[in-house]
Length: 437
Image (cartoon, rainbow, N blue to C red):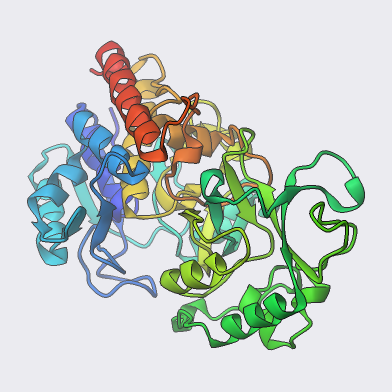
């Protein structure tokens, strides 16, 4: 059997290579370092952590903590190496970057079925391949992917608005209504008085913002400007833009508010709400501080924070099959952030998931569709666009991506999430016992 070509030696690519090799398939891992680096890279190592050294919460009451536990229980390679390279970080998993990358390289080099090759890949290879080149895919390969996918299905800049959990919203303040009552009431509305509006504008202007790196400097689309950029253009810009109150009436007063922040349903269950027009470069603590000061959001929980950064990603729901292969070529797969997952842990888990599917396809096994009640199932649902109420965009793992669980009377959110985690691990065990090699 000819080797499977795995393009990219980042987190997803290394997980893919190790998972396939552990299941007996030969792998040719092509990585452009040290011949060439992406603009974000600082070293020539595999599996480089380019930003934080944190893999976030270990708690099962947190969706990313659940995902890590599921990775451990299904034989994930990089999560095991991360655990071994851990440094003290409270209830989070943080790693010593050098120890972690060195351990991943050692595992790659120790495998007799993995051949590491230094090569700048500029075209989609023929034959069986998995592309794991991340959000900063090299220009020529990006062009090749765009040609294969269609440019309308490949995105080059990521402007993401925050997503809020519905339980943190104060529905005594918010109300459901679409502008002029057109269509279903798929929007929740936050009324602002004149004083509240201008206090919000001042907070945006004074908020601490992420300074973009040189390669992230963007010529923003006028229809997708960061909220703070709009505020900088003038105090009334937002009032005539995404915060315009036209067609909306506050049922508490019977009047149209001075301005309105709208939330849009992010999933079919209505458990997650997107802040419309709130893509932002505010730092995460500033997003919590400033957005929670809005009426009705004092207890808001962020399922995803807003961001604006350079990111090449595919419209996975339209381009991937149910087996997660590329629609035009069943021998081609994509894994990691290029598929539209966000974060270190999600990239590794996506590599693990894609490797299962590719291995099953290439060895004649049944396709491993994880239950939607599990964190792996949530990643699968995300890649297939299941339950999405709106446009597809990159996302971290969060509870809204899992199949919902009926709320019990007087049950608090931590209690329900504990039940969801227990359900997930039980369902994962049954799935893994029936499919795992």
